[in-house]
Length: 470
Image (cartoon, rainbow, N blue to C red; front, side, top):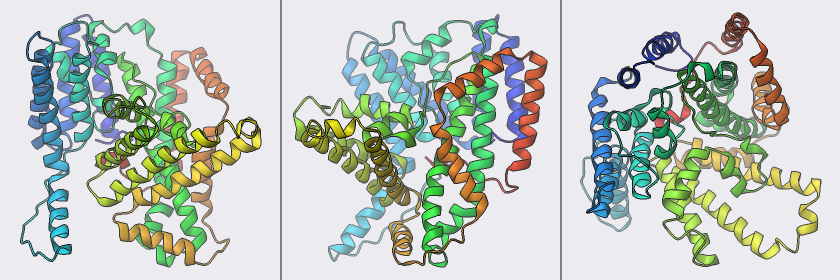
């Protein structure tokens, strides 16, 4: 059930009606949202609904153990190991076995091993991250009350964020479930604006880039000119941003209409002037999760300069592996680890010496340009199906012919996807204020008109959300 579909629109209208219809019965309101979340997930494949339920029950049981007075560490170890074990079985078992076979072949050994890749449940990484966050927040005593069974199930499975995030912190979302949503405090204008913006980014910009440019470039780079390949790389940078941030905007807007608040997940990431700033702006819920639950436990920046660089590299390496069980994702993570560690080294050596330069406007724009192109180089690894495909794309970029024959539609969409991030913040604020001033009837009329325009402008062939595969 994709967000930009009639099926989801009908499902969400049903969710609004049932959710708000039962809001005076708070327990029933939450149970209905939980049931609807399982229906939403079961729409993809009912076979994995029991897995979602068992994972949620496991996380709750271990969390209650952690909130007790005895064996807290043991409960934490068991809980995290169980969650990661489930993730490893579905996502990494075949990859690691194939890697063992390949390493044995390099050593001159021939291993006969039938490797079957399990069918990957949608959103399993986000489910496991929620389960771990629930247990870690209990371990750090960030949850004031004993975790309710139904609340923990709804926290893991709440349908707006179930498939592709944003990753919610238990300490942020569970307190919201303790209070009955107030219909008089719903920011309807902001919610509808987010949904429209998300649909525009996904349906018009991301889908156009995918179907008319990016897929063709990465499928057969040898048939493209170097100019088309470069546009394809920049186009993918715009596509993945519009695709993922569009999903997040819709998720945040839907949650707002149901009475719940999700955290900001994107903050104009291509405006970043350094790798560190990029990760403070891109997929914020994941980067902060990796920081709090991986980088800091590894030692963070508390154990000297070189240990800090190593911790950054290991964190991003594992972050790359989280995105996919393939060597191109591992190298993508390693690339960002090197960027972070290298930038930290540059800061330590040149930071004070280049203080005057860094205050100038031209330096900031040069830094943005360098950072953006370094990120785009990493996107080649991320988008390619294998290392050989990434090599073919980069080879054609280096060896291909440079022409001015570029498709206008994708060129405009790529420019819009990247350029919209440079709109002043007051522009979005003015839109929100304008939406607040509209009467409810006008809200509906403007929203309906926007949906029609998005349907007309978008390509007829839809493209799946990129982060569904993770």
